[in-house]
Image (cartoon, rainbow, N blue to C red; front, side, top):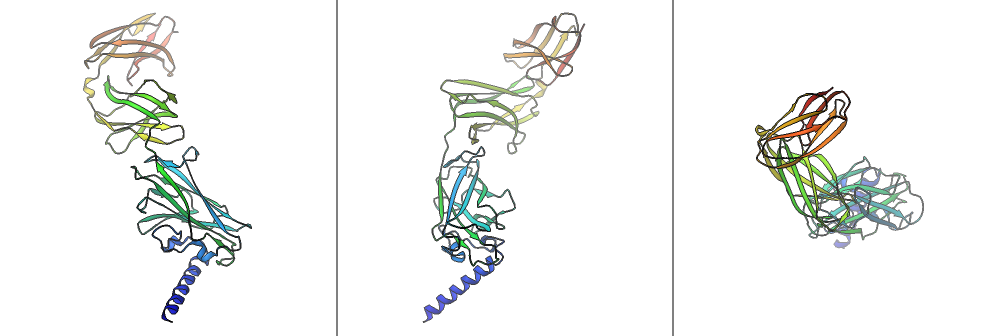
Length: 377
């Protein structure tokens, strides 16, 4: 008799909880501290407990899918990448007035995995028992809910998404609705730490008053591009250049680019390797201490020229460089490129400007921001 009485009290409390949570059905259960998916470690209560299973809209089925930023569906995650996870609530029959859902991502120990981020007002993120739950803030007229999921920064093994959902008729009560049953929908994704590119080197060095970044690849498969990033402190990085990748290659390929405005002092660099599906991985961070006191000097003699001028360049860095002199109009149009090898010490580069029209021009090094001005007469 006592057991029956206790069971009756628990059932009454559960029904009362359903009434409180879904009388207006504006929020999901997580807003009241309830995890009602049926995932490991939860109470066993699901959306179907209060919204009937089956209900007026028959059985409710849930689909879960994960896509890259480019829209490609995947079943693996690259640590540190962002994905779109879509939970779709499918009624068996009828046309519901609204849809709701709740989802969680767990690792193999059933601990929270990664981070959900809502990018619209319909979806909210709640913390329950040290887990992040995504759920509806309000009934959605559409059956598909898309949440951004930031994968863990490191490989933590397989991750499983669990989700439940319900359909409502819009009368303000849970009567006449349909909810998911006791077994949640699941999607398991595995870690993918394979780069689309097999790299052999990534180096940085001073090149005049700029930083020259060089890297090489042994093989490439589905590679899209490289993004070069700089930081003054090693924490906050900003992209300053993008270099197209080969896509597919089985031979050694050499790449390079310049950072023309480094700090005087410490500079931090990293290379972002991006696949064609939008996933990416970072190289190790390289540090270079720039000494701008070593800037070489550039001079043109004469700077009032007819057809030819000699550019004097003093290289006091002690290294040999392959570089280029660029000639621009005053509006910034490139009208001449002169490749040359630069040796340590004094260098003289003869420029033939006979094909240029009369007017003012600037001459600059490929790697440098500074320029000298000449007048062609």
